Length: 259
Length: 329
Image (tube, rainbow over all chains, first blue to last red; front, side, top):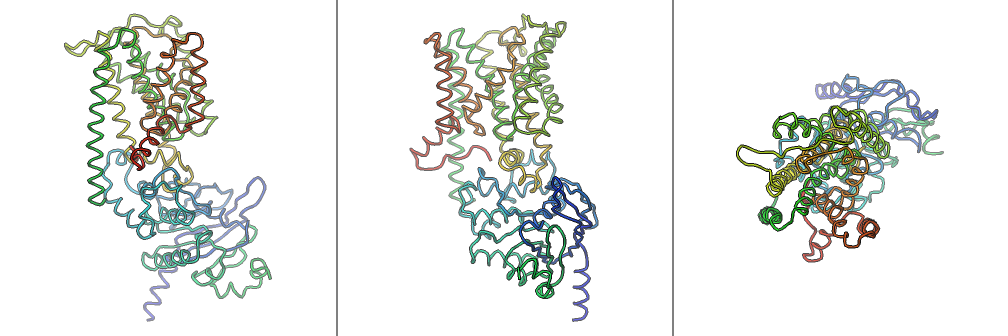
């Protein structure tokens, strides 16, 4: 027991992502103001905060969609500050978006295959390797799991919003990333589906020991599933800790729960 | 893939092979029934189809814009004209035309693909003007406004392509080859990456698509197609002059791709056929021909914004009740 716990602690202590003094300014508006945070391998970290607190900007800075104004981002002790999004994906960081981002005029299967094809091999191999049966099998497995495999030949734009959300999630997961950033995975999804997504995320963390950062407004679910929560407010870190600590933090209650 | 699906796919492939083969035979036979002038138009049309496929790759699949297709044609044409006048074989000059256009495409694309949409359009228009001015003013090399005359037609061993008919057949083979190459390209992972960039640039980059490299190769390959098309013009006409590669010609290519249906595989064939053949047919209306042509072009773009090739899809769905199978990834 003690040995197991020690092992677990050692595993948990390994940092997968380290963010130091991250600043992001949009034309004078400070969206992120000196964020410092660590993400441990295998944990499910929740990021919460009121609208406009900088949660999505933080994800955008990590994944290279926005260049940050100041500060550094390290992935497994490697400085990835200023890298472009495609290199960040290839190193093992995948994400979903708050507003679904899919390829609307491509079929569902091609959406998933497209998200898989760049993760290995080089440009030339991608030109000459035409047989994709292995990738197709993997993609179909993912579609089966997301319960949208019957729509594989349908254009992605013809899917319902919930289905598109699932597709977006599938695209983030298909290439087996080691760090997954989920931007409001439950927004606009019905309860049953939301539950399934949550179960899936938990299973993912447990089974593949992958690390998940999740942004979500539903406080009840977040306090339930996350191993640690960070609260952002006006671009600053307001609080950080285990769900129980967050629940009783007065500042958090004031800023976020509004009481 | 289930057995039923693979059987269907096999049937579809067999059917398409038959269709393509018969299409080829028909195209092979057509020139025998044409007169001197119409053989010219036929060959010209095939050459333009190659260049339009290039633009369809850039615009329709990779979602970038190029209004320099005529300039790249000019580069290809002058390479072939100058080298064959210097007694080099056409078979050396012709691949060089494609290669040089590819390289110039990379050199132009490298800085200019940082900008998008109308900014990229402006850059490429500027490039077209520069090439036109060079062709006009560098008289010692390009012959200036008079161009280059008496360009011979190629021979291959003891096969001569001197006659209009045999040259038309040569161009037919080359253009079909280029269309098949494009078909292959679009069915590789590159083809899918191009489409991903067109559909959603941010998402494409976040799933690992290296935007810079893919945009660059799409632009360069599209430009090489124009260069290859241009390389066939000097032996067709026997002479070339700068006005063949003016900016307005680039605009014609844009019109061809839009009318045919951008991002659709048969789009360029239909688009080029409509834009080249319609004015020829409308010659009977004499002065009114341009007016009528413009009206028809506007009607096509308003009524079928996805291009004439989308009519094929609609007809297929009407008759079979099924969605037209996509030809590319």
